[in-house]
Image 1 (cartoon, rainbow over the protein chains, first blue to last red):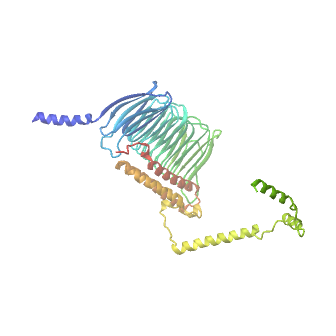
Image 2 (cartoon, each protein chain N blue to C red):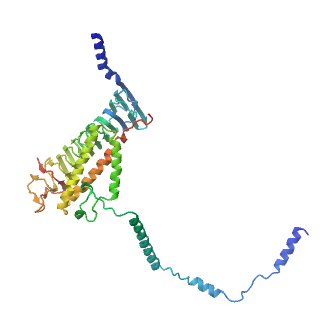
Image 3 (tube, each protein chain N blue to C red):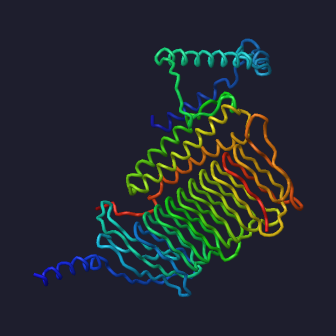
Amino acid sequence: MNRILVFVLGGLLVSPVLAEERVDRTIDAAPDGEVEIYNTAGSITVEGWSRDSVRVTGEIGDDVEELVLERDGDYILVKVKVPRNHGRDIDADITVNVPEDSAIEVSGVSADIDVEAVNGDQSLQTVSGDVEVDGVSANIEAASVSGDVEVTGTGKVGEAAAATVSGDVWVSGFAGELEAESVSGDVTITDGSFERVYFETVNGDLIFSGQLLRGGKIAAESVNGDVELDFDGAVSASFDIETFNGDIDNCFGPKPERTSRYAPGLELSFSQGDGDGRVVIETLNGDVSICND
Amino acid sequence: MNDIDRDDKLISAASGLTTGISPERDLWPGIEQAIATPKRSRWTPMLAQAAAVVLLIGASSGITYFTMKEEPVVIQQFSAELRFEQTAFGAEQTLGSVYRGAQGDYRTDLDAELEKLSPEVRADIENNLALIKDAIAEINVALEKNPDNVLLQELLVRSYREQHTLLRRVGALTKHVMVRKDI
């Protein structure tokens, strides 16, 4: 009896493992081509390497229809194909090695996206997973609905756009132009040097800690979230800050003034350094804090 | 008489005919005058314009009449998140029909998309749309008391844009992910 019980329990424990299919496929690729990757559920890890080929390894669920790996000239398609009325086991955890100078486009639904050491442009989108990118040295667009988006740059100049609905956005070590937005998540930008930053939320906080280059611009807009700007080193810009119902804390000196005798609003306009850059902050209820170190 | 003889006879007879006929009276001066002085139209540009205006007014009045006759005037009530404050934005009291139409289309796409997502993600999206809706309503209320406040006007317009962007983005989320349609 005990033997039967052990056998049954053992079978139950082993069966999920058996349901997964191991994949390992490789195809030749252009050194700086485009790789497009689709995976509905599970995880997608993309790693740049020095070979002129794309390799897909990992495990795919029993209800996955097939793993597509195709080449058309400089274009490579990696697709975890699932039937429209799919079963429960459509998860696929795949790692895709791509030539390091490839441009990539990655899409998932309930899949985490993790990218490392890819030098080309990147477009990454998922619904309920997290997006994490390390070593960004070109243009990037990264978005999730309920997951977090974390982008770490190499300090090279590029254009970045990061967006979530309820997740948080983190961008660090980036240079150039950045647009970041969330509805209820926080947006945090650190350790970068920027020509232009535009970030906004409805309920989340906006935090900037970086360098504004000469002639650069920052625009921060929030309804209920707080805005905190902490500049690296000296800053040269004209500031226009206004809040309808929040406070303004300014460590550069000038004090905010009431916008009206009858309304709670505060505004603050002043110039720092040569004033060749521009900083505009607007909130409804959020507090504003600006300083430098 | 063969055909050639018959033709020779006709040619000989034709050559005897007069080649020029003088008119009974000199008509050229009249023709020349008619060419030099074009006929003056009674349909002057001014008259044409006046007729066009009358036609336009008549047509629009007719359309208005039939429209009003068949459909009684309905005063629509808009909720706070669909309302611009009249005093702040002039006569444009509500969002235009084009905007509301687009929003409706996006909402349809969104509903179709939400069905594909997990209950947790669905709830998350709906909660965040509600946040934007509440923010818009709050700004509208503040604008009622401070209609000249430019900050509020800007925040309101941006919040509408944010709402629109969210509807559009979420409504197209899974279109990027391919699925087999033949199963």
